Length: 341
Image (tube, rainbow, N blue to C red):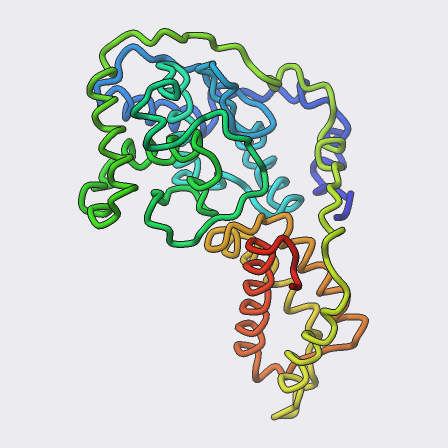
């Protein structure tokens, strides 16, 4: 990933300024009315004594046993959000509706911790033990009817805590009509019914947990944007050799000319699909966007080295072939832990 920031940051020295000195706040930004909206939604359900604390941090989250909601700092600035999109390719909450979806999900964690729902027998019966190991890598079952669908990547399947938060988010979303949408999904429907019952039972009570201690508040982040985006995970370690043959097979036919235009580089086409594939492969398979990016860039480099190209008249077929190939590799990785058996 290139280390050259957009010109505005490069020219203003903000790239090397500690993030805490960028003056970022929720107040006065597009985040302020969205936070107010989800709080109105919460109050509208009868949950009247819960007052979460919203703050800016490095990522979405709620520290365990607190009612403090962390929002990624870059969402407080349109310029920083665009920078994050250029550097990470994916922004969790790039537009208004996405931010609301994440806020509703995080409020699910807040509600869980505020009333310690995870200790209840009925909660454990439906969602499982919250003490189950929390792993970043999980193996989702696409289209499973045991979990609701809210955030991309079948996120409810990651952990009981996330399963509850996704269920709560669906329940909270205005106009979600969950009773009819999940009527034929007995397990997921049971979770939603439990959520509805618990909120009717507890919503008007004062929650026992009110701790709003912050975890990595933006005001305490002493490293710069340059440092933040310089973190490089070794995700390429599990990309196996042997994919050259598959690439040749894809482009051997697509590279045959049917007209007068010369072939176009296959690497350029893959590069143009990078962002869309990262988002959509994650949404429908659970293969993490950063892994898809590393995989794609490896394949781009191999295609360029092999001199692979495609007939411009067959670009749509080439797009479809690449999309199918990447999706197949992603699904194999999800279920077997590697891209090749």
